[in-house]
Length: 58
Image (cartoon, rainbow, N blue to C red; front, side):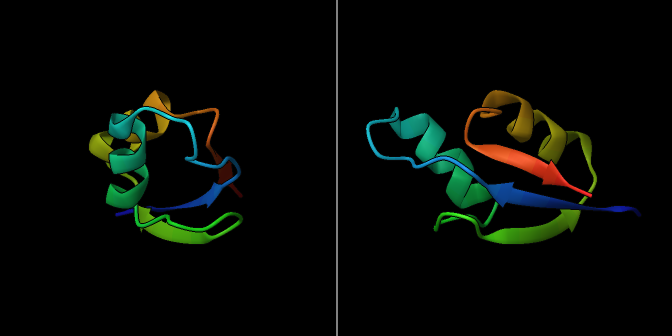
């Protein structure tokens, strides 16, 4: 399966708890951290819920 790189660009401070949990679920916990995950509909859905906090890196 294809991989996707996700970079955290926004801070979870003063964000709803649900958005913080999505970041943790994606394996992100620090600014500018990059993780590589499987490109699944679940991961894409999580990214779609917090586009202001993450970006997809090529």
